[in-house]
Length: 321
Image 1 (cartoon, rainbow, N blue to C red):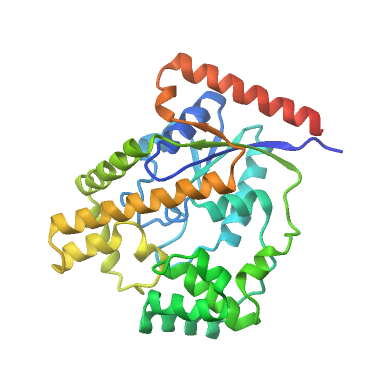
Image 2 (image 1 turned 120 degrees about the horizontal axis):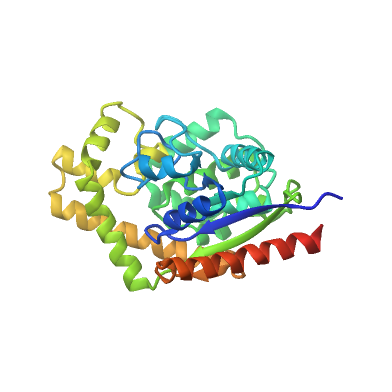
């Protein structure tokens, strides 16, 4: 039996420093950085989603960043298909795949497989989207709670994308999405060995970094980026149109919110999102190695941590091979 091939996962909340850690790791081992952020897949959103800079991309291979236009809905299943192909490509080149991002569904689907939910007919999907647009997310959440209380209890009343997904699955299959997800997946990638790191700064500093990041985005041209997005006349229900900061910047541009109010709202929403990500990683990846990236600021500290993790990866593969 062939030995499982190594994959390094670096997860964590937004603004935690995980992308910088992935870059440092890739430069050290000649690895390939593979994106696992559901918003950084969009070509139109480099600044708003804080994608790695062109300088970063020149220093190490960065894959699955900016690969689709904002008009496309990227699913976890499609991302997983692409990520597995890039992981295999990296291994074929003798390079370490380093998967980095904060989208929990992407990371979980990669490591644990996906539930075998049937494809949803287009008419049912569009009907679910139209319903959300007509009555709003809180009202859709209430309707979902009446037919699927388990899923509704897990979703925030304003999480429109997941509410639409849960509603369309119930309408199309007659079964709740939680019921489908409870069934064991059949496509677990047993040929891969995952080592997981979670970047978890102290909460006060993380929140301060969230606030700072949004102002930096504005300085780097986020308003022009969102203006170009708005000029495309896209459906406001598309995931890219609801990326953190996009609605608030759009409100600045349209004059419906003053600049400071919009900034404060976007910062609050970013902090809320980071908090939910922290909770997800603690619940879903309890055995991951936790670290604060600032602890690795010196070359000596990073080298020591790097050696410990790489030695552990080698031992795990040796035992399972």
